[in-house]
Structure formats: C-alpha cells, structure tokens
Image (cartoon, rainbow, N blue to C red; front, side, top):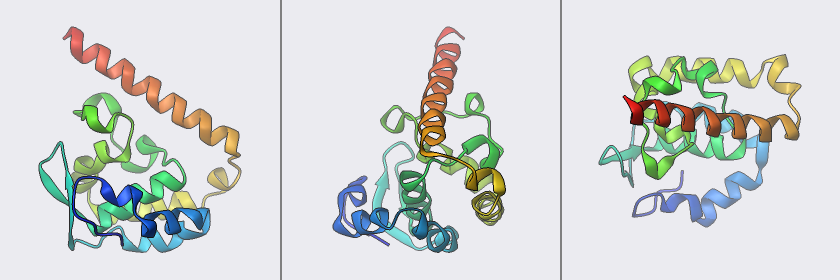
Length: 147
C-alpha cells in the first residue's frame, strides 16, 4: 500500500497510480486489504488521525470504481458529518465503516463486487452514480445549513 508522508499524498504517488492503472482487476486484491489496521503516514484531515492501510485500500477501490456507499455501508448520507475537504468521497464514510465494522463492510463490498447487479454496470452508469452521490450530499448540506 502506498505510504507517503502528508495528507492525501498517496493519491498522487506512482504506487497508487500503478494500482489504479490495473483498474477493476485490482479490486479483489484491494478488498483483502480493507481490514489492515496498520497505521500509515497519511493524515485524514477531518478526523485529525492517521489513515490505516485498510482505509487507504478502501479509498483507492473507490477511485477505481465508485462504491455504492449506502448499499455497502448501510449509512445514509444525511446522517453523516461531511468533511468539506472530501466532499463526495468514501473518506466521509470511514467513521461509519468503523462503527459498522470493517469486516462487515469488507464482506458487503465483496458481495457487491461479485453481484450480477454490479457486473451489469456500464461506465455510463458509474458516471451517473457519481453525479447522484454529489447531488445527494449537496441536498444533505442544504438541510443541515437550514437546521
């Protein structure tokens, strides 16, 4: 797993880019790393803590292919406190994943990865999911601002 110093710099390392270049074929390998609790040198700005290598694997998996957050985490967007630095990102769901249990998340993600529904997704559907997530998060922010 990429482990460079600084916040979020693992996104730009050559190691991360190589993993992302493998595309969907890297996902089954990454899912096996989700429960790795070894600390990395990467800070999660909003939590003011270091990401685990498993959390980095989750983030990279989401960069390769959008994760249907609600379906896999069981958390509803409006129930979360979003970090503006990670506006529409699995990083906002990391606390919920911890609470729910990383092993449970790993199992649900693995089930999703092997599901006929996911295998039927097209690239267009993946782009639509990203747009829908962004709208959902913006709607939640609006609700929280008015409350």
